[in-house]
Amino acid sequence: MVEAEGKISSALCSSSSPVRRFRAQKPRRPENGRRRAARRPGGRVDIGAYDHFELELLALPDAVARIPDGATVALGRPPALGLVRELIRQGRRDLDLVGVPTGDIAIELLIAAGCARSLHSSGVDLGEHGQAPAFGRAVESGALRVTDSTCPALLMALQAGASGIPWTPVPGLLGSDLMTRRPDLRVLEGMAIVPALRPQFALVQARRADPQGDAVIARGEQVIPAAYIDVLTVAPSEDAGAATERYLESISVHTR
Image (tube, rainbow, N blue to C red; front, top):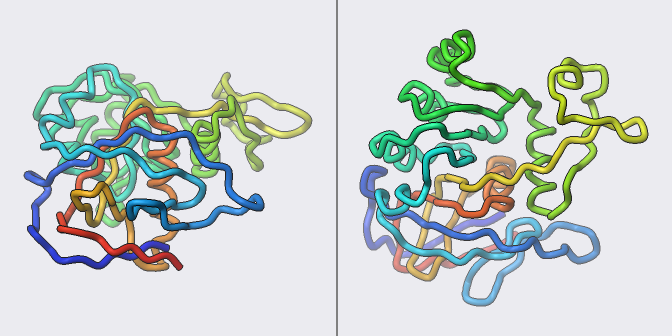
């Protein structure tokens, strides 16, 4: 798990937060077949078996300007709403969205604004606020093409994309409607296999970031699954942006 401490140089709201844009590197093979968190040279940290990223500090409009119409965009949870609102402001269209592992308010806003062409996810909801009405209307009218999935299948497809393999076996899919509704799923030696998923862009929300390129996704043992999901969102993607809640002069990173 990763925690961070540092002197706050500024507290930035989502509408003006700096954005980290980074290119995913080839995953590093874990030692002894186990994932681990380890300090990297220059203060960067591995989470799981992934190398650190090359980061660049950009303003929100400049970061989003690099995402063209028709791009495949994966969105983590909690959502990077500053980046999502900027996508809407710049009038992006025909985006192929990936909700990891489910969609939330970010997906709903992009659909309602007419930015989305398709969605690959295991569901969309607004949590305690109920169902997502724009998503429901778009599906019923046929305006949104949906690739249905399950949480494990979607996460393992991203893991396959990060690992550089074309497909991966997923338990629990045989006998389900997905096997008949999705022609890209196959059966091999009695096991369902799903194709690897490699989004062009990934958008995540960071808790803290510093000028050295360190970014902290989550804090506290209770959010380890959420942090790992965001890592899987970023790892197979060609480029990614992380909007930060707080911009620090430095981050002291601890692993445990």
